[in-house]
Length: 464
Image (cartoon, rainbow, N blue to C red; front, side):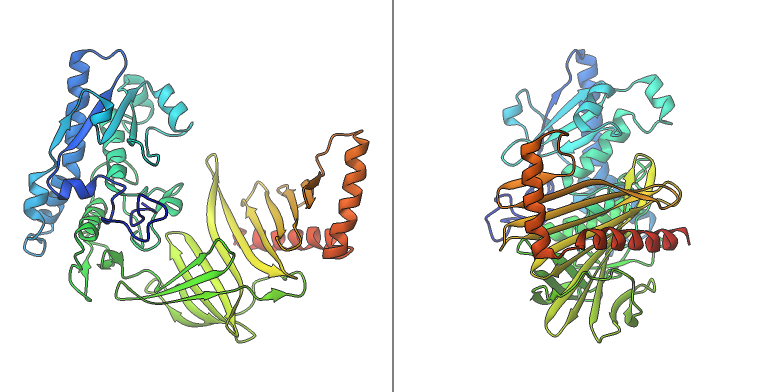
């Protein structure tokens, strides 16, 4: 999970124990997992069945990993953890939630969807200072048939238990957002954390890496160890994929950019860059780059732009982030990933840069055949003003403004203001004059024109 190496207390410099937000450290310490099962209206027989499924789910993550290692005939290589894996997990069931390490709610699927979201089969939830929750569906014959057996308690339970240990989702709609930027694998298999179908070598890779993280073990040293998946080219050094980019890029709260460089799984150096101020609206048109370094998938890691700027890349599954640096300052940061609108997968590209002292975020979301949207957000803390523009595009590329919001001081004017509100109209005109004074007359049409142009370019690229 993205927060596996973060401390429970937000202000702490480092976690007392790696993965302390999850249950794996106490399991490795030989402590039981104490579960409170809440299943309203269930019979004693049902309770016994639910407890059995949960106990098997926790044990499967350990014994299943041992089975994968044996199948690969690599027992000697993992001899240090094989006894631990074969032993499994000591699970205890308690009568009160206050005594539990985790609270399992067994509910009808309709209630699970209300708790977890309309498309979820179940979920793991944790809140600071409270016992984490598992929301799992009761078995239902019709539901199992309609979902091809994927929404039964056993399948969903095994997946959500994986979350409680510290594993992240591996399916397309979630893996980029929940995966740790250093500890997720370069590629994903078809295991429990992905398709829910059955325990896989990909799941076993994850468990071994998490165990090593908690124990502070650098398996294989600087050489690392090869994935347990026979066809995988991936291997791991200090619990991270060696196929991952050596560069990690992140936007900080003060809008500075952090570049971290890793070698053999260890942080080698880190550099913080402030944003260079652009004197005009940044033309968001892809420029030619000379690639200086590629990863084993052929993707760029480091390149040089047309003006001599260095451009760094890093990847988390399908998400790609890149940053341009020149003369000790960052010119821009861009992110490319995919978002989902129902079952529709959409291409999203976002740019962050500084324009005339204002921090700008602008992006485009494109679908191959059904249109998309674009947005522009400008924030200037020094002058206490802001600007938000949103455009929607139909499948032919025609656009219309869906929202225009300007703020100056504590007063705000919106393109969605109520008709006939004279007081708001006067305020809107006054604020618009102030904003135009700072960002320039004609900026409004320039922004719309640039967003439309950028959308057209991205649409053509996506269609290819």
